[in-house]
Image (cartoon, rainbow, N blue to C red; front, side):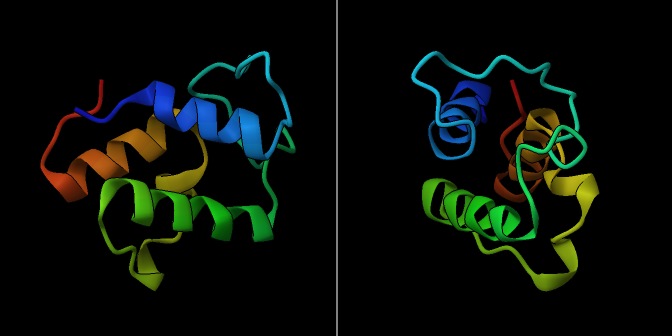
Length: 85
């Protein structure tokens, strides 16, 4: 199972600079909400690769995979064979 909370915590600590957690809906667009920019996407990809032990191909770096907590969790789940929770 891909833990949404682990993704939320990373975003809160590294992009929202918040010790108070992640207060956006899991379907909220990280790009539209201004949480991440193009450089932030690269940091997010590094986090996903290191945390979940997978490799992200260049063609997989698209909003469908990285634009919300739910999309990230689904992407990781599809790569690891573990369903998102």
